[in-house]
Image (cartoon, rainbow over all chains, first blue to last red; front, side, top):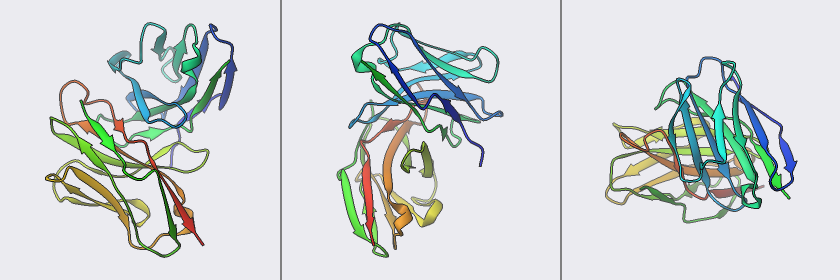
Amino acid sequence: EPEVTQTPSHQVTQMGQEVILRCVPISNHLYFYWYRQILGQKVEFLVSFYNNEISEKSEIFDDQFSVERPDGSNFTLKIRSTKLEDSAMYFCAGSGGVREKLFFGSGTQLSVL
Amino acid sequence: AQSVTQLDSQVPVFEEAPVELRCNYSSSVSVYLFWYVQYPNQGLQLLLKYLSGSTLVKGINGFEAEFNKSQTSFHLRKPSVHISDTAEYFCAVSRTSGAGSYQLTFGKGTKLSVIP
């Protein structure tokens, strides 16, 4: 089965630093998503992306967050100035259609010190 | 807004025994329902989904779930579990239309431990 690839698997950063989390979705997917899971809490929706623009975003996705798909393959999540509370597992996902099966990556564990 | 409650955070069960993982949801609008599984060090995989039609949905690995609208439940069942079913299971919902229809709202997850 095709896979969504996320890099790095672990990232450690200092508070206030910028981080970029990278995802390579499955090639024929059209819809892309970022979710996160803080340790011990629910998986939370951050943002959905279609046709090179954000289609929906949650309250978590404030001005410190941005997404882009600059070269038609990589899908990135940028956090401009990380906070301690940004420490979480971040999952990228993609699908061929809105109601179609979501394929998730194995996640990037972000630790903000 | 939607919410999902998974009543059991951990469920231990002996191998070859049946299991039921419970999920209740709350929503003021129509929703679609999903179960995902996460094996250690892996991403979330779709087990099954309910969009419409028969309320009994069959998924991969012998799992099934039944949508009960009156009880707002979508419990996951398997008649006989294997060691390989040890994983964390997440129930999720999404709106069928309108704002929020792109996003999944997840429960906190249930860790299933299958005991040999």
